[in-house]
Length: 312
Ligand SMILES: C[S@@+](CC[C@H](N)C(=O)[O-])C[C@H]1O[C@@H](n2cnc3c(N)ncnc32)[C@H](O)[C@@H]1O
Image (cartoon, rainbow, N blue to C red; front, side):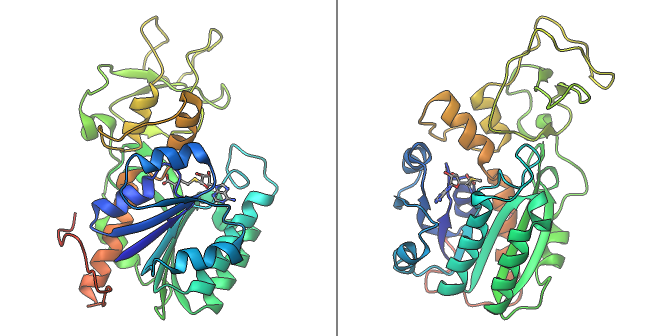
């Protein structure tokens, strides 16, 4: 299946789809550090373009004849961390829907923070998808049940021309794990520590975590242990001198990027793109669900077929 990735960032979605045997043929993003990092990890082209210029980018995307367009429009305007009002970035959700409805690939996937599901921008985008003839599967997935040791909830809308709404639900339910994955289950004690500090949004929440549980959501900023951390009743241990926060590379591992992924950029840029990314294993989970559905229902999947036929 030929894939074009929009708002591709450093390539979390692209990497997961590639792992599942999809053929990613091009990508687009407006931010040069992300574009540079992406280029270092894939052989297909990535174009630095502002995707709100819908008329300009449509012919560029159409040239790649995608079977599926995948993308995570920026989410700060909906996210818990960002301000609640919907602004310019939420408009990119509508721009994405406009691109999909005008190109009309057989399939599309849109990923966003869980809160986006209830947003006005998504309601508008949903109307555009339905008018363009897509059946939609709309799910909030917790990454820790999808092969990722992280408690990260994300909204996915998967569209397939002519399908019934909810068409992918049974396959997703079949693939979901019945228990949340811990860091130790994913990579053992690769970091050489049992506990680590992750700065909470406020001190009503805990800041200390064990590798025997899923990590909290990896965000775009990483802070060291502050002098004033008061401790929290739910901390698994009390603050001690050895406790540290995770490094940028360790956070990329919890986002399930492979060890040999090439990280190009400043620390601040990398933290941002890693925090923005769809965990590779979560992307792979959704890609495998699509693949399983295609196989089970004998869908024709373009001239190129799958790069591998292995599922899982
Ligand atoms: C949530 S991140 C996408 C992460 C990506 N899907 C991944 O898995 O790594 C959103 C991306 O949209 C890009 N972006 C923001 N505004 C844009 C615009 N107007 N045109 C194109 N890309 C834009 C940002 O640079 C960022 O990389």
